[in-house]
Image 1 (cartoon, rainbow over the protein chains, first blue to last red):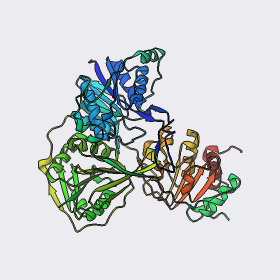
Image 2: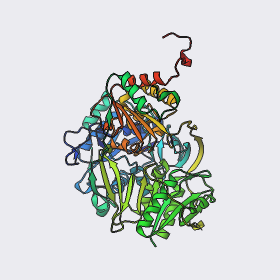
Image 3: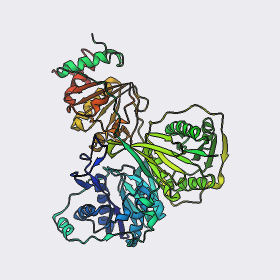
Image 4: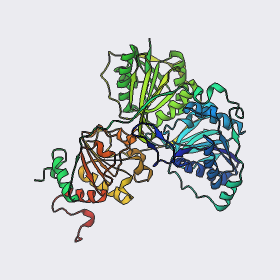
Length: 270
Length: 331
């Protein structure tokens, strides 16, 4: 059995229920919105810790973000992750998925060797699911998306079941590899008291472009091929008819309105 | 000549239904650009090219007996793109599209825009892609001004299929077949066949977080059976584990156009709305009178979803009929 060095890529996101847009200006309101660990990442961390416990080795968490993103690294450490590193520098700002993947790939290479990289299958804010496969391509390693069962490592290979559009598929791939972890594939643990203590004390290195030897034109806005041109508030058609009265009455009225759409006895009750 | 390409996803001897949408939208964009439409088929079944040639001007075929892996297909695509330099490359927003496209984009160092719901070409010939962002609270337009190809994944069901073309040329590209890879497919378990698929359903009833419990979602499924409706869900219900991700309706799930859509306990974030706003009649039930779903509902009911479902169930059951499970029991 080999010990594994596992890198988990995590992300701090606005609380999914609290993100707001100013209806007058169409701008995203960031003030006062609590920032949390991307919900998908709990499953990623759990799978990494399970593997480490089964095979030995260590788990290192990496994230890119503002200084406050350190909080999600400390949370990961409280759950049992050994170390965390934060990519944080003005030059990283404005990155699209490619520039983000490039910075994370450089950061991962700067951590030394690795056997396995795990990411969430998507974040609740960007929701593109692109960064994982892009990191893999930039590092020149294979990947799979939406891991749904625990990984089995056999020598220099791993076996993994993942969700596809057509069912579930078992893949064999060589290490190192990158896998994106589907939400709900395991039961994430809670932080331990000891973990919380350690998370408080742990030193978290903060790396900029120099520490990861990043090419300046491949990070941040400069390294982003895509450009956001404009934002608009979604148009909503109106003209709704609100039904009234008791629920029984409303359901009766609804079925009358829908008489010609429903099968058989449901419509046209009168 | 500038080419718009689409990736023709296939499994076994069938093209994925999204390919029809890609061909339709690809044709529209190609006409706006004054270019032509190309389809890329990487599959063991080269015969699928004939079907594609009814719609595309050129079909690039990489026939390889290997089952799909991101590894060999991304390598084949990159070889084709570097040789032919298409202007635009579109993928369906399937799991496969969203796994393959980022690899290809990263290798080429170009931009990839995810889950687009609308595409247009500006006066300079630039592709402008619109998509809901921030959980659907905003519509954002994104472009890739100076890198080629301009790449996008399209939200499933958001685009209309197009008419047949004049008959396209099939171009066999054996030179694009990559060498042996490192990934192996060892096993597959197909999805159970869904008796009432969302796509093409006349009636869809969907539940959200506002249903409050798994039991209430089960009640919704029961009502769906009585209605002959397909069951869908918003992100909230999928995240709560009440529904498989296959039932997700919205930008990152399925986009449906039923005659009747009944939304129970769904607040109406744009992420969900883009998946159902084209329904002919929309019924919304929500206990929050300010829920945005009411803005687009044809009929709105403010109230408790469980109560609504129980009332509806009571009326849909045949008069005098006894629920099989409750046979012999008195109310």
